[in-house]
Length: 141
Image (cartoon, rainbow, N blue to C red; front, side, top):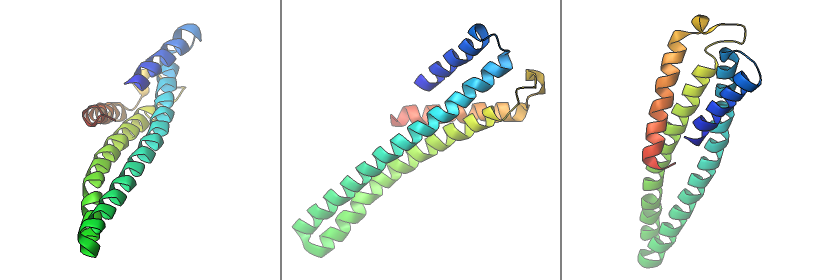
């Protein structure tokens, strides 16, 4: 949500302070969101990957210590199953955010007016962005 707030500030700055058109402000804001979501996607996936490795390693070690080789195998399986489900949810949310932002960003060019923008890209981009925000809000990422 912070990214959208900053994107609105970027758009307002571009239009009101920079003296540009609303179309240029919109494209500047979506360009900012594109970079913002890519940076945070990399950060989130590094954190989730680290948590996955620690969880798998800890449960593998604990299972092997208590039940031997078979326990180590089951600890590895148990330690990998839940983090993979969490990682899948996070990756789906990030893909929706990036996909929606990409569609909004490519819906028009600087020379176009809003009436010439691709309506289908605007609609589907907005839907993907909103769904991605709802999913990421529910997962806490």
